[in-house]
Image (cartoon, rainbow, N blue to C red; front, side, top):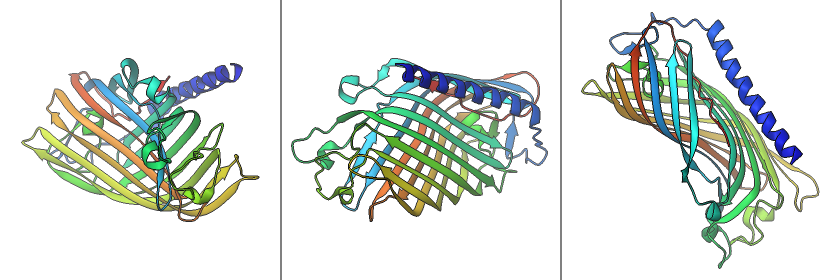
Length: 355
């Protein structure tokens, strides 16, 4: 019980530090100039409006162990949240609340406890995405396909604990005509269709551990993952990525925005525990795909739309021809209204939840 309380206290301290850092740093050091923006393409509300939003959100974080013939898919017990947020001057914050009626059946899927911070900062010509996710409690979602005949499709694994920390930064070449802010934070409007090439890089880390082997004792393929059995895994990688983004504006007020980037890098994978007398490492290739999608309706006063963000990273694991894959992101339905006030540009952050 003491360790549990200490962990909750540590997560709370981290959340408070992130909150204070976003307020202090953004408020005192950022001076973004908008004179370079083409006003016929992008209209901003930085200096004139307070944006209030309400939304429904679903966040996710799952991982897979993959070999040439089979895969294991582990998922947390996801649930939807109700959120409230605002954007004003140099601050944009969103707060989410768990509503029990939106949760999955704990008896079937088990309980998941999580600490989840996802931050997306659109700073003039740069896009910065930061993921920090701590999940406790998973279930095997494809038991019928991956396990020997007669095994259940859903296998609860309350002992699996994971940590995922990723940081991506991309340069937006056509910032004069293209807006990331409009669909995701509502403090800009894309007046005309436009797009941009993007170029950047990222750092990715994921690890997990369990009380027993993460690979079950009765897989359908007896040689799954080259007979490795382990209760701990991790990988750390670094790479470059490139892609493009485009917003299609229809009849001035309807929009569809899409962004896809892909990258390649190098990283180190590690497994440990269970029947391994020592840890096992492999240095190999890493791949990533990052996608953002938004669609909806906006005018000078109101916004209604959906957004979807997903990051998938995959790295060579320790056994030949095997992979570890991590997928994280969120889906959101948003209603927002702009209220005229006065001045100043904005940087955005989502600081989310402790369960």
